[in-house]
Length: 334
Image 1: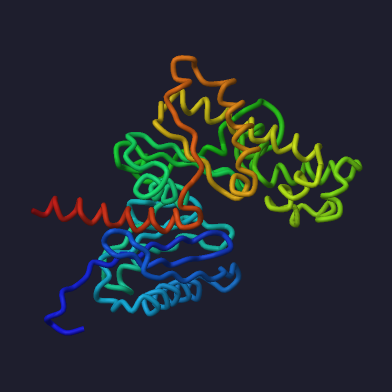
Image 2: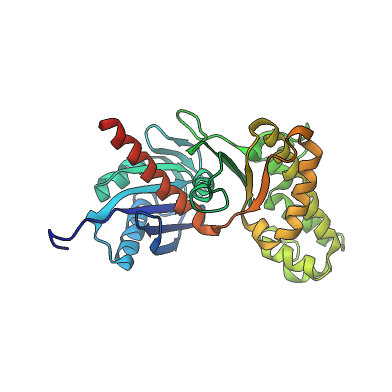
């Protein structure tokens, strides 16, 4: 790169999940230039994990043929409770992390602005900027998976607290008894309707002899009863599994109905493995649940859509978020 070459504005979106990490290189219009995906390792220690994270970003930059000096900012969508003011991951149990200053690490390592946000918030913001929520005033995202994550973008900004993310949809209390989501009260939406909860009920159905096809595919091993396996067993005729999934989707719909009453969103976006594996069945259940809880005056305010960006949503949102935050800071300096 010579002095005469105009400097491009390149943005990095980093999506850090429980089992994978992905670095995506974008141009200033959020066009994907390259990406690098790797598995996370929960037992390697924080410093080694950070170095591996930085290495993943470097590999993506090399694949895009982008010089590090061209990077205008790095955004990272990360799980767990965060201190957004300090840019610190307070705890990421799946990674074995506590009090990791990720924002500072990225900023110093790559000599550019960095920002972190909740991974689900990043996904919803990605859909708002470049997916199913474009042009909307209020976008609600609900992502049922191993847990149930939620996020909201309101008038172009991620809806959050001053220090931490919010929209903990999975902890909506749906009943005064029943399953919990590991922590918090009993009868939560995540405890009743997450993929983990569905898998547990499906394993019971196998044990009772009600799901012969699922028995063949996974037996009663909850770890093997993934979204794709559930969809396959339903396609093969396991009616008991279909009913379990429908009931769970209806519970998610009931939770969304309550949120519509509070937020009146223009669009509700569903994503995650369960939705991707069986969109028609799952959306039917969600719509039925929404009808049960939404106020008649708000019944038609929100369109229900499936995520358009898939597993790129988090990276797109993280890059778009740091781009937006950098623009705001630049305006304040003027």
